[in-house]
View 1 (cartoon, rainbow, N blue to C red):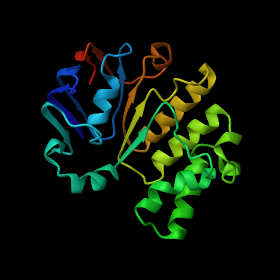
View 2: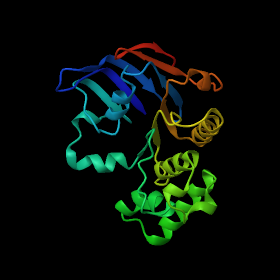
View 3: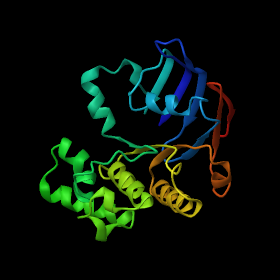
View 4: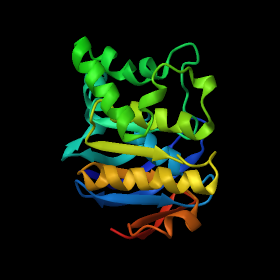
Length: 220
Protein backbone atom coordinates (compact mmCIF):
# COMPACT_ATOMS: atom_id res chain seq x y z
CA UNK A 1 0.00 0.00 0.00
CA UNK A 2 2.67 2.54 1.08
CA UNK A 3 6.31 1.94 0.22
CA UNK A 4 9.39 4.14 0.50
CA UNK A 5 12.43 3.10 -1.51
CA UNK A 6 15.62 4.92 -0.48
CA UNK A 7 13.79 8.21 -0.07
CA UNK A 8 15.65 11.41 0.82
CA UNK A 9 14.28 14.92 1.23
CA UNK A 10 16.33 18.12 1.24
CA UNK A 11 14.58 21.48 1.38
CA UNK A 12 15.72 24.52 -0.68
CA UNK A 13 17.23 25.99 2.50
CA UNK A 14 19.65 23.06 2.58
CA UNK A 15 17.96 21.35 5.53
CA UNK A 16 18.18 17.57 5.17
CA UNK A 17 14.91 16.15 6.51
CA UNK A 18 15.11 12.50 5.38
CA UNK A 19 18.04 10.32 4.35
CA UNK A 20 17.75 7.03 2.48
CA UNK A 21 14.47 5.93 4.12
CA UNK A 22 12.95 2.58 3.07
CA UNK A 23 9.93 0.73 4.47
CA UNK A 24 6.73 -1.00 3.35
CA UNK A 25 3.35 -0.64 5.07
CA UNK A 26 0.95 -3.27 3.68
CA UNK A 27 -2.71 -2.49 2.97
CA UNK A 28 -4.89 -2.62 6.07
CA UNK A 29 -2.00 -2.33 8.52
CA UNK A 30 -1.32 0.30 11.20
CA UNK A 31 2.11 1.52 12.24
CA UNK A 32 3.44 4.20 14.57
CA UNK A 33 6.10 6.60 13.31
CA UNK A 34 8.18 7.69 16.29
CA UNK A 35 11.23 9.77 17.01
CA UNK A 36 12.24 13.01 18.74
CA UNK A 37 11.07 16.41 17.58
CA UNK A 38 12.87 17.39 14.38
CA UNK A 39 13.63 13.80 13.39
CA UNK A 40 11.67 14.03 10.12
CA UNK A 41 8.27 12.55 11.01
CA UNK A 42 6.21 15.40 9.54
CA UNK A 43 8.43 15.59 6.46
CA UNK A 44 7.88 11.88 5.82
CA UNK A 45 4.11 12.17 6.15
CA UNK A 46 3.97 15.19 3.81
CA UNK A 47 5.44 13.14 0.98
CA UNK A 48 2.54 10.67 0.92
CA UNK A 49 -0.26 13.10 -0.12
CA UNK A 50 2.24 15.03 -2.27
CA UNK A 51 2.29 18.13 -0.10
CA UNK A 52 6.02 17.79 -0.80
CA UNK A 53 7.94 15.62 -3.26
CA UNK A 54 11.03 13.53 -2.48
CA UNK A 55 14.44 14.82 -3.53
CA UNK A 56 15.45 11.28 -4.45
CA UNK A 57 14.09 7.76 -4.18
CA UNK A 58 10.55 6.54 -4.70
CA UNK A 59 7.31 6.89 -2.74
CA UNK A 60 4.79 4.31 -3.96
CA UNK A 61 1.07 4.08 -3.27
CA UNK A 62 -0.44 0.80 -4.48
CA UNK A 63 2.62 0.32 -6.67
CA UNK A 64 2.41 3.77 -8.31
CA UNK A 65 5.46 6.03 -8.04
CA UNK A 66 3.68 9.18 -6.92
CA UNK A 67 6.80 11.28 -7.43
CA UNK A 68 5.98 11.04 -11.13
CA UNK A 69 2.33 12.04 -10.73
CA UNK A 70 1.46 15.24 -12.59
CA UNK A 71 -0.06 18.17 -10.74
CA UNK A 72 -3.44 17.59 -12.39
CA UNK A 73 -3.64 14.10 -10.81
CA UNK A 74 -2.83 15.18 -7.24
CA UNK A 75 -6.46 15.98 -6.23
CA UNK A 76 -7.55 12.50 -7.35
CA UNK A 77 -4.74 10.91 -5.34
CA UNK A 78 -5.69 12.87 -2.22
CA UNK A 79 -9.27 11.62 -2.35
CA UNK A 80 -7.96 8.31 -1.04
CA UNK A 81 -5.88 9.83 1.77
CA UNK A 82 -7.21 11.37 4.99
CA UNK A 83 -4.81 13.62 6.91
CA UNK A 84 -5.19 14.46 10.61
CA UNK A 85 -2.99 17.25 11.93
CA UNK A 86 -2.16 18.08 15.54
CA UNK A 87 -4.05 21.38 15.19
CA UNK A 88 -7.53 20.81 13.70
CA UNK A 89 -7.54 23.99 11.53
CA UNK A 90 -11.34 24.18 11.71
CA UNK A 91 -13.28 27.07 10.16
CA UNK A 92 -14.65 28.84 13.22
CA UNK A 93 -17.50 30.57 11.39
CA UNK A 94 -18.82 27.24 10.10
CA UNK A 95 -20.79 24.61 11.99
CA UNK A 96 -19.33 21.23 12.89
CA UNK A 97 -21.46 19.71 10.12
CA UNK A 98 -20.14 22.10 7.48
CA UNK A 99 -16.51 21.62 8.56
CA UNK A 100 -16.84 17.87 8.16
CA UNK A 101 -18.74 18.18 4.87
CA UNK A 102 -16.05 20.32 3.21
CA UNK A 103 -14.13 17.45 1.51
CA UNK A 104 -17.37 16.07 0.06
CA UNK A 105 -18.49 19.44 -1.27
CA UNK A 106 -15.12 19.97 -2.93
CA UNK A 107 -15.71 16.64 -4.69
CA UNK A 108 -19.30 17.64 -5.60
CA UNK A 109 -21.08 14.88 -3.69
CA UNK A 110 -24.90 15.05 -3.89
CA UNK A 111 -26.54 16.71 -0.88
CA UNK A 112 -28.29 13.56 0.36
CA UNK A 113 -25.07 11.54 0.22
CA UNK A 114 -23.18 14.35 1.96
CA UNK A 115 -25.69 14.46 4.82
CA UNK A 116 -25.61 10.69 5.21
CA UNK A 117 -21.83 10.49 5.25
CA UNK A 118 -21.34 13.44 7.61
CA UNK A 119 -23.79 12.05 10.14
CA UNK A 120 -22.19 8.61 9.91
CA UNK A 121 -18.78 10.20 10.59
CA UNK A 122 -20.22 12.16 13.52
CA UNK A 123 -21.61 8.93 14.93
CA UNK A 124 -18.20 7.23 14.70
CA UNK A 125 -16.53 9.96 16.74
CA UNK A 126 -19.40 10.36 19.22
CA UNK A 127 -20.51 13.87 18.22
CA UNK A 128 -23.96 13.31 16.70
CA UNK A 129 -25.50 15.90 19.04
CA UNK A 130 -22.93 18.60 18.18
CA UNK A 131 -23.41 18.98 14.42
CA UNK A 132 -24.83 22.52 14.72
CA UNK A 133 -22.19 23.78 17.14
CA UNK A 134 -19.37 26.10 16.14
CA UNK A 135 -15.77 24.97 16.78
CA UNK A 136 -15.20 27.59 19.50
CA UNK A 137 -18.08 26.03 21.46
CA UNK A 138 -16.25 22.71 21.61
CA UNK A 139 -13.58 21.37 23.94
CA UNK A 140 -10.13 20.59 22.60
CA UNK A 141 -10.97 16.89 22.50
CA UNK A 142 -14.20 17.53 20.61
CA UNK A 143 -12.40 19.72 18.08
CA UNK A 144 -9.92 16.92 17.42
CA UNK A 145 -12.82 14.50 16.93
CA UNK A 146 -14.25 16.87 14.32
CA UNK A 147 -10.81 16.88 12.69
CA UNK A 148 -10.86 13.07 12.61
CA UNK A 149 -14.41 12.94 11.25
CA UNK A 150 -13.44 15.33 8.44
CA UNK A 151 -10.55 13.04 7.50
CA UNK A 152 -12.87 10.01 7.52
CA UNK A 153 -15.91 11.37 5.76
CA UNK A 154 -14.74 10.58 2.22
CA UNK A 155 -13.87 7.03 3.36
CA UNK A 156 -10.18 7.10 2.42
CA UNK A 157 -8.18 3.89 2.21
CA UNK A 158 -5.22 5.59 3.96
CA UNK A 159 -5.21 7.81 7.04
CA UNK A 160 -2.13 9.77 8.11
CA UNK A 161 -2.04 11.34 11.57
CA UNK A 162 0.64 13.83 12.61
CA UNK A 163 0.86 14.08 16.43
CA UNK A 164 -2.95 13.81 16.69
CA UNK A 165 -2.94 13.70 20.50
CA UNK A 166 -0.24 16.31 21.10
CA UNK A 167 -2.66 18.86 22.58
CA UNK A 168 -4.85 16.42 24.54
CA UNK A 169 -4.72 15.11 28.08
CA UNK A 170 -3.79 11.43 28.63
CA UNK A 171 -7.37 10.18 28.96
CA UNK A 172 -8.52 11.87 25.74
CA UNK A 173 -5.34 10.76 23.97
CA UNK A 174 -6.11 7.15 24.81
CA UNK A 175 -9.70 7.52 23.53
CA UNK A 176 -8.47 8.99 20.23
CA UNK A 177 -5.98 6.17 19.81
CA UNK A 178 -8.72 3.61 20.43
CA UNK A 179 -10.74 5.26 17.67
CA UNK A 180 -7.80 4.81 15.31
CA UNK A 181 -7.58 1.14 16.21
CA UNK A 182 -11.28 0.74 15.35
CA UNK A 183 -10.78 2.36 11.95
CA UNK A 184 -7.81 0.10 11.29
CA UNK A 185 -9.86 -2.95 12.28
CA UNK A 186 -12.30 -1.90 9.53
CA UNK A 187 -9.49 -2.14 6.95
CA UNK A 188 -8.08 1.39 6.82
CA UNK A 189 -4.29 1.64 6.39
CA UNK A 190 -2.91 4.00 9.05
CA UNK A 191 0.41 5.70 9.75
CA UNK A 192 0.45 7.67 13.01
CA UNK A 193 3.34 9.97 13.89
CA UNK A 194 3.82 10.50 17.62
CA UNK A 195 6.54 10.86 20.22
CA UNK A 196 4.19 9.70 23.01
CA UNK A 197 5.87 6.36 23.65
CA UNK A 198 3.98 5.85 26.91
CA UNK A 199 0.74 5.99 24.93
CA UNK A 200 1.66 3.67 22.09
CA UNK A 201 3.07 1.14 24.55
CA UNK A 202 -0.57 0.34 25.28
CA UNK A 203 -1.20 -0.76 21.69
CA UNK A 204 0.22 -3.68 19.76
CA UNK A 205 1.44 -2.21 16.46
CA UNK A 206 4.75 -1.95 14.58
CA UNK A 207 6.92 1.12 15.10
CA UNK A 208 9.16 2.96 12.68
CA UNK A 209 11.82 5.00 14.50
CA UNK A 210 13.35 8.09 12.88
CA UNK A 211 16.52 9.77 14.16
CA UNK A 212 18.04 12.71 12.30
CA UNK A 213 16.10 11.79 9.18
CA UNK A 214 17.20 8.16 9.13
CA UNK A 215 15.00 5.14 9.77
CA UNK A 216 16.87 3.23 12.46
CA UNK A 217 14.27 0.57 13.26
CA UNK A 218 11.71 -1.14 11.04
CA UNK A 219 9.04 -3.05 12.90
CA UNK A 220 7.04 -4.08 9.87
